[in-house]
Image (tube, rainbow, N blue to C red; front, side):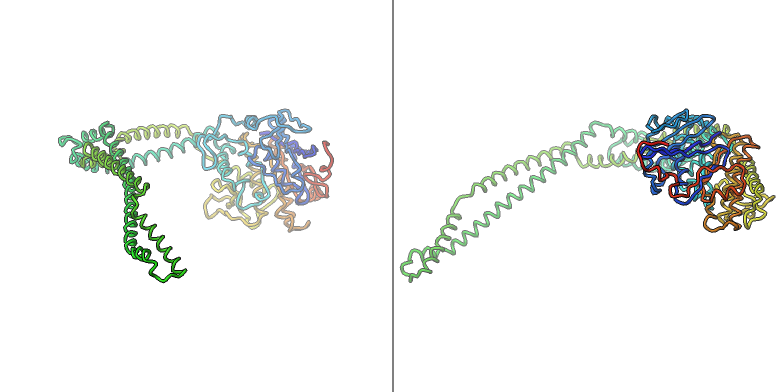
Length: 619
């Protein structure tokens, strides 16, 4: 697919506009010191192409001043601009003519831009994964973002021995790569992939149905013996006629579940429970009242006994003049006499009004309880005989057990579904083109080996080996040249980050060449590399062996552009984000390298310091 980036754009909160331009058919280099924002370039491109969140590092100096990020690119000879708001992620500016506004504003929905891009990628809007995985949901579209896994190499990936592709720590991206790899290299088609997904789903469904059918067959066998026991018990309880066979007896039992008379019995049973609870409530209340009356009478009786013991006080009072009188004795006699009269009045007094009311309430409660007892007895006498109780309990248990028996035709329905699925699977298997990617992967390996030969490079410590792509692990392994692939001739763990850098560069150069050979148009013809000098940057000097190896790696990129322009007659664009001085690159006399910008001064960087002042100015 013809694709190259023309420019990256940033709009600051003071309306100033920053533009970084790139050329096609060049190795575009942005180089400079650390923490200048070079790596952010790759994240801006990802962000503008519909990343679900903003991946741009917030800790980069001055980046919080940026409000809009934009990208202008050419795809299939069409110039397009996509600009996205840094905070309001649903706000996009889009131009199908490549317009760059002085100040962006939302003018389109994200979904509409996606549909436009999908058309350019050759992906029909109706083409979806009919069946998903753990992360990719059923019905999700085959996104162009998935194919961009072949276009970027972030710093942590570029010289990694654990992953070959970006974003492989994200489950969704892992699933996506597995699904689209064969499409990308031309080993299969989208339509064939969908058929494979559908086949896999139907095979899983068939396994489930067969398991259910087997389980039901076992359960039905176990129920045969239990049915005989149910029929015997139902005859014992007079629920079915003794002359009925098992099938007729089961049919009779089923009728009980909808019989109106049976429902009435059950309803009466509920009524009895309600009346019993009400009776219990009133009985508890009656007991409390009676206990209170009893305690009152006992108290009064005790006071009467006390009164008898105090009667001598009357005699003393009457003969008081015969006793020697003193002031203290007078006071004491008056107090005794007062208490005696109070007790005497209480004992001789008639029942208190509150006690009388309580006695009336006891009478009412007694009458109500007796009435409830009569109602309960009446219901039990009429409907709930001991036999009926046993019958109801039995019917409740049987209803649960017969649920499976009532579905005895289910086995046949599963059989029908199984046969239908088996026919659909056979039809799908006949229509699916078998994927044979062995020749394609052999070609990929040859292209990788050619990359090594072109720059006269041999992996340190692995002479006589060539790189191969392992489809299962999605990594580069080494195998002995001119040997058939066998486990003993394969090396998986390859030391040295510089070795891995070369393997990554050779793979991505080779696979983009393979896309052209296979006439696959899903993958854009560009590559962004973030800091390929990382294995050498801090440990090497100008004359070191490692430095020479590094410039051989840069030569791989120069050769790649040359191959596309001169041999394949195709456009290709590479963007490299580096630390190395541009003057050192110039000394190598590469044919296709182009300096975009060099960020080394205090004012240089993705967001130059001199852009931060002033208002409403544009570049």
